[in-house]
Image (cartoon, rainbow, N blue to C red; front, side, top):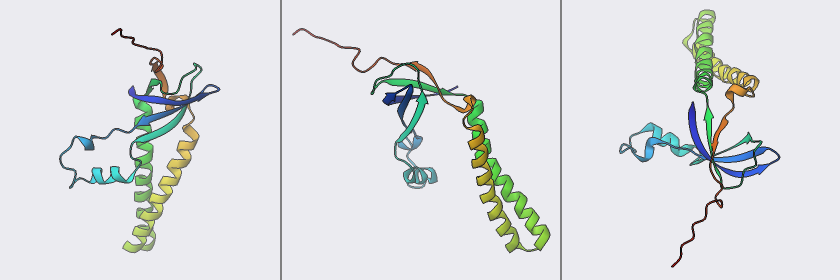
Length: 154
């Protein structure tokens, strides 16, 4: 099970809004200038992911919870997202090459197949994304931020 800590932003009617920080290894690597991953990380959201999750237990803003998701669902999602467009790309490129006997037609077929593969992946993910196996679960809940108080006598 993949685990990640998140902070509760709000809780209302059994639904918690969570804030999770994105972690990358780019902060500890010395090859930032010549690295493509570092450049891609700069394009996306900087450090936050906001999500909602069902929680029957009341949570307070600022409270930390540990989320978990099965490795099998994570690998299945990655397989769907990467392999479906790749399969569409090769399939339509081959079909267009056989039909039109042109490299330009094969390139157009590859483009159409890749885009079609992304559309198919999006449709399949909408069908299966709501299943319980693909949803994160709450593994543990930390104490609320105001539950622990330290008093010192001077």
